[in-house]
Length: 265
Image (cartoon, rainbow, N blue to C red; front, side, top):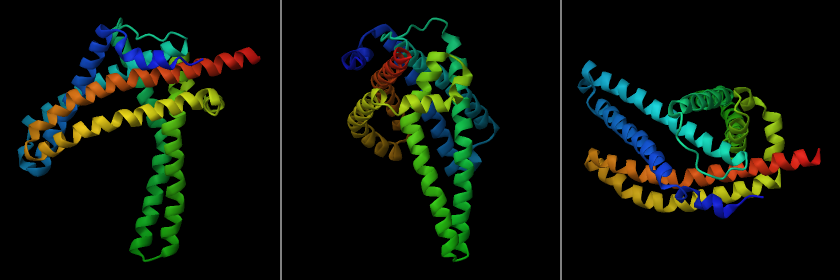
């Protein structure tokens, strides 16, 4: 049975480990903001982006991707722990070994996104062609194609993906990402839906103070671009409070669903 209290307390259960997680999230967010500042400079003043500016941007991309993969890898460790019935923050031992799981996860998401992107592009082309040719039939056809694919993607990304992630973290096999039939059986159960609903509600509740803080910073950054760097610690704090709880809920739900099915067998 899902221990909701333990899930909500998880971000505050080990200050040393959550501190390292915060630093990772902070570095990822800060590098992303610096890259955005370079990009905005190039958009406003194209001549300002010479080779001397492009090289730092490339370096920033490499650093940003690296820390993103590490952060994703640690997130997978959290949900993997919970899926095995261990509701504790994992350690950071074998630090660089978290890169490969994060990379595999990112690759799987790209593979899953390809069919949606292809159909989405076709739908947009139909919409554009219909509006250009003043053909309502083509426009309606594009809309009828686009709306279902968007809805399916939203259901997949918001509801199925957390269970898919838990399945991969539990099995620790890349092929587990594509055992979709099995994962769908796990996902459409009350044992998963109720914890997912709690996670969804918690995410919405936590996003309210986050956006209240971020909004004035975003306004300030229009006048003073350096102010955008202030979003990094806010985003990092939001990440380390929200992520462990959500991953714990998803992992515990996976543990309950799979344990129940084994018991029935």
